[in-house]
Amino acid sequence: MRLLNVTTLEVQEFYGANTPQYAILSHTWGNEEITLPEIEAISKRLREQQKQSMALHKAGYAKILSVCKQAARDGLQYVWVDTCCIDKTSGPEISEAINSMFAWYQQAMVCYVYMEDVLYQDYKQGYRTWEHDFTRSRWFTRGWTLQELLAPERLVFFSREWERLGTKSELSKLLEKTTKIDEQVLLDPRLLNRTCISQRMSWAANRKTTRPEDTAYSLMGIFGVNMVPIYGEGAENAFVRLQEAILNTSDDHTIFAWGLLKQDTSALAIHYDKLEELDYDEMIGMTGILAKSPSDFTGVGRVVPATSTLTEDAAYKMTNKGLKIKLKLVPTNFGHLTTQKFYLGVLNCQSSEEHPSSRLGMLLTETETPNVLFRTRTRMYSWVSGAAVAAATARTVYICQNSPARLPKADRAEEVVWVKARDLASPGYEIIDIQAKRARWNREFSTLRIAGIADKVFYQLAVITFFNKHTKRGFSIRILDSGNASPCFVDLSQSKAFGEGRIDLDEKALIAEAKRMWRNPGKVRLVEPAARGKPVERQTVVEDVANPELYGTEKQPAWHSRATDDGWEAAKDGQFSDHVTFTEVWEREYQRTVEAKVVRKGEVIVLDISSTLWQAAAVEEPLPEKVEKPFEGAGE
Image (cartoon, rainbow, N blue to C red; front, side, top):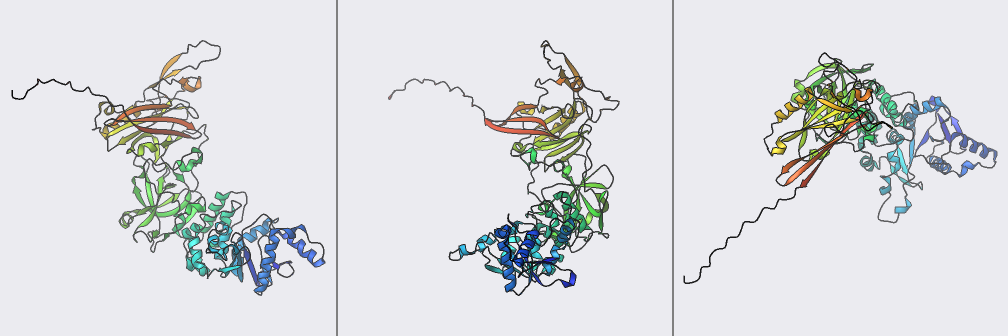
């Protein structure tokens, strides 16, 4: 490693046991840092008593002089500063430095933490103290400074003016409050390896790095693993590689205890407001077994390894099919609207806030391949009771890391529908039935993954039924598709109970009506689009709507609809349109207007259902006629 001589500012290189005692600097980078070539030029010119270079005017040079003076006061001849002790033009040297940096900070006699945004003098005479700036320092938000806090046994914090603020031991309570890292771990670095993976990851959840991949590389020393840095691979790939390296050295199930987002269990809740913010795999509820970034571990600091294992074989390993692991699987009704099977994979994780016998369960979904599952994205933890854990059966399964490959858009026969129905959740509506082919419903993200028809035909994609158990009202929305990347349409099946004002609508009858609609999709009227220079008269034909479950069979042979092949289109005549509206009597003089609109945006079909409650105009009743009574005089 290279060290900077505090007297001559000469950069010297040392190896192994010959490395002298040194101080090390922890800081956040600015715009004028001194590089290795510049510090070498400075030291050379100082020795030759020549004119100093322009680098002497950089703010970073003053920082280096200050740290050298402080090291000299402490009786140390050398310091290490990351900005000028690494040759950043050498890939192998950068890789060596990244893999060795945690050890370098561990072996330093002292680490000086320079906090450029903490102004000691400003609060010297006032009622406030420098602690106000200290807890808000940028130093606590950067990725690399986490290992610089944890690795050294002795840290001394300095303000912008190089005023001593205190040691790690003296400020341990304040550091614990600021970083959420247990005080004992801060004071004794040896306890770091005994801290579970989820807790260590949670410390880095809100930290950022300049280069995306450094989000993962800055954590290697904290987890005691080594890997070759590959700048350009992307933050997600780097973080997945980090977790795979950790898996090879640990059997700690808390590495899978990630994904806590928002505690929102509403069946019609929407997590995103803009379609552009959505990740396709997340929309369909699919994600890999490993997290995408440290931010996925936000809020999981309370999760710890269980004191006892649940299966005899607790080992696991990553294979080309995914993570091979033996887990107890608890069936759950998460997907009660579809035929897809969901399980809670019981992890060897528990929490101080839950019953000691309960275990953390991650939501898993079966694929069409036996014993191959994928992890389902969810907003909440599912704690499995001790009784359910005891009754569960253990299975050896493969949990996918990569999402099953999707076919090219032109060839795939699969659609994703995002049901935006926030306005219906408040009145008490919920989805009670979905009629579709191979439907996979994620009720938390309100997304539906459905098998469609690859051919360019006009077909029925899904029938989604809503019901309000309190008012006994319901309706079904039908989505009609005219082929990939083509317009979509909606149709409505409204119960007669709306018009009749009945309140005894049978939920089962409404589902039966939706099933009949699915089995018998009916017909569609197609019209020839108007062409330039031709008469307005256009030809109209009526054709059957295809059913994905029957299409291509003897009951419904495959054909190519004129709707796309011959330039024909569905007639927007009120029956088939991209939006539909109806009004229902809500209670007494109030009525509710419901509008359903459907639009295709990229790979997603958005079904947007809005609802408005309004007061109908009161009908004035005629006043009773006044009847004149004869005058009754006194004394008569």
